[in-house]
Structure formats: structure tokens, C-alpha cells
Amino acid sequence: MRPSLITVFLLCCFFSPVAAPVVFADEEDEKPVHPIEVGAADWPWWRGPQHNGIAAADQQPPLTWSDSENVLWKVPVPGRGHGSATVVGDQVFLATADVETQLQSVLCFDRQTGEQKWSTIVHEGGIPDAKNKRAAGNEKASFASSTIACDGTYLFINFLSAGAVYTSALNRDGRLLWQTKISDYVVHQGYGSSPMLYKDLAIVSADNKGGGAIAALKRKTGQIAWKLDRPKKPNYASPIVLRVAGKDQLLFTGCDFVTSLNPLTGGEYWQIEGATTECVTTTVTDGKHIFTSGGYPKNHIAAVAADGAGKVVWENTTRAYVPSMLQQNGYLYAVLDAGIAICLSSSTGEETWKSRLAGTFSGSPVLVGDRLYATNEEGTTFVLKVSPQGSERLATNRLGEGVFATPTICGGRIYQRVSHKEDGKRQEYLYCLGQK
Image 1 (cartoon, rainbow, N blue to C red):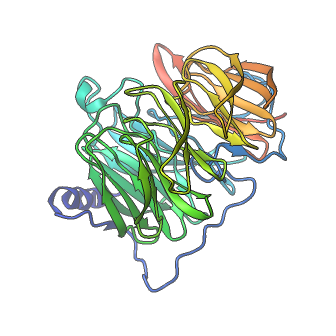
Image 2: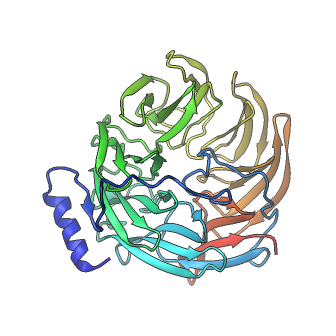
């Protein structure tokens, strides 16, 4: 980004009394917004095409790999981030933050070769010193923990920078189109909420101890279509729109509530107490229930009736705090933070099986057919064959020394963000794994 644009952006951030978008490219409002168009073999946003962590079943990603086996390409990534790769068409997109250079950027790679096609600076100078624990947050956090959303034409990304959360839009050539401030942000653990695309809107959130917001921005211009203030409580979940109980509902967990909104207007459908204060996971549904989980101030998984009846159907004290769950055919599959895979009945919460893995998990599991892929923080991926009746471990693969991002699985390939120790320093790589 040109210095003159950075200057304009910073002036608007600090002196504008409202969160008006900073527009970097001419847009004609009278033209209709382009539809959301992505391919069947793409992974266009957080948790995949259906927003539920379930990948296309008609693909054969590799079962085994290492640093030398089934690696189609591997590219270094500057800085650090926990966001997953976004794959659309012949491009792979990744957000990253480099503390040393003070740059928060979006990178683009060629899907077939891994060649870097472009890099665009989105923010500069807004990353606090790691020694400032209050501003930097949890030591596991990064300043690029959101996953890019792509509607086939534009890219949308959230960054926490200079004490506030901003949503930015780029085109697929890397040109920055607009930036909109969502809210000031008081750091507690960090920030990692990802954009949700719905019709002509990008829906984003910024819950925090200072009082955040959930907002819908017009995809084309960044103008705020609607915005709601949120409680002054830390929370880390991403908003999601699901077709449940007969209508599209914008669902959000955390700040002690499960909230359902009209995604087009922000109007409340229903809200009940049924979540913990701090939630990280993105909810899933079986069409009747919303499933919420959390780890502070208590551990829980709960099923909430999605018809607005205000009923918690069942609840337990299982700690599924950071990795999001999966729901398929009336059963919940989860990998707990402490390294245990479990299966629960969606309707009753009854546990049908559990399997001990190893390590601590931050990334979420991905389901491909009956194969569950789950990667722990130490870089070990467990591949399980799962059903409501039980699980069978098919493979255990080690890659790198650190993984916090959820794997992206599409087109028969796995895109995994991994860190290595090289000469005593941490270096991230993006791997493309596939059958050779």
C-alpha cells in the first residue's frame, strides 16, 4: 500500500467521529452487488463452504505425510498468524502479521505451484510490543488470527490494529478497496473473529471488555448497513448465518448469551442465557438445535432450541473451549482442548464414544467423508475413521513444531500453516499436501 494511503487511513482512524469506511477505489453504488460465486473444490472462508468444518466427501486428501512425503509445495510465510488458508480458483490467500516490521498483510499464492503472486499491506505500525502483555494478549495469540473470506470477486479480512478492529476489502489482484472501523478493542486474550458473508453483506464482530459491536457491512463499499453494541465482556466467537428452524438466523454465542438475529437488519429473533462469558468456537446446528461450548468461567457443551422457545435442551461440563465442533447426521464430533475426541448424540447429549489422542488442540477438526483430521499445537495430525458407533485411528502425521491454524481441505489437497524452529527462530510455512 502506498504511504499516502496509509497516511489518509490513519488520519481517518484517529480524527473521524464515526466509523465511516476509508475507500481506496471508485465504486458505483447504483450497480447491483455481484453474487457470491465460488467453486465446488474451493474453501472460501472460515470452516469451509458450508461454514461447518465439513469438506467435500468426494475427494481423496492424503492419509499420510511428512516434511518429505506427499508435499506438493511449501512456501515461507513472513511473521505469524493463526488464520487458515482460503482457497478460491487458482489462488490461495493467507493473512499474516510481522511484529518486527509492524506489517499486517494479505498474501496470495498460486494454487498449483505455491509461487507468491502478490502481498498487500493492510495495516502498518499497529502491532503492540510483545513485552506489553496487556496490549499483546495471550502468548498463544497472534495479530492475524482471522481467516479471509472470499466471495469469488473480493476478499474480506478482520485485523486488530492500533487498539481497534477493522474490516478491509481487497480485490483478487491485491488492491485495497476499503477499510471500516468496527470498534475500539481492549485486548484480553487476543482477537480472531472471521467475517461471515451473507447476500450483499459482510458480517463481523469485535466483542471485548471495552464494549464491542457486531455489524453488517455492505460488501461493495464497506458502509455499515446495521450495527449493534455488545456487552463489555471478552469473547472470541465468529458470527455465522445458518438455515435453522425454517429461516436464516445470524447466530452468535458468548457474553453469557446465545443470540439469534435477522442477518439483513440486525433485528433480534431471540436471545437466552445459554453460553459462557468467553466463547471461541463457531456454532453448528442439526436444524433444530444450536450447539454452544465454552471454557470460562465454566466448561460446557449445550444444545439450545433454535425455534426461540428459550430452552436449553441439554448441557454437560465437557471442556470444548477453542476447537469448534462438527455435526453430522444427528451426532456431534468434537476434539477437546486436552486432546480427546468424542462423539455425542445431538438430541440428548449422550456420549457414544471417546478416544484419547495426544497434546493440546487449538485448531478445529475437519471432516472428509468418514475421516476426521485433527492437528494439535505440536504439529501432529491424527486421522480417524469415525461413525456414531466408534472411531479407528488411520494415521498419525508430524509436521513442524507448532500448528494453531485449522487445516484447509479441498480439491484433494490439505493446506496447512506450520511453524518450524530454524537457527533458534520461529519460521512459518504454508504447506500444500497431496497424493504424489
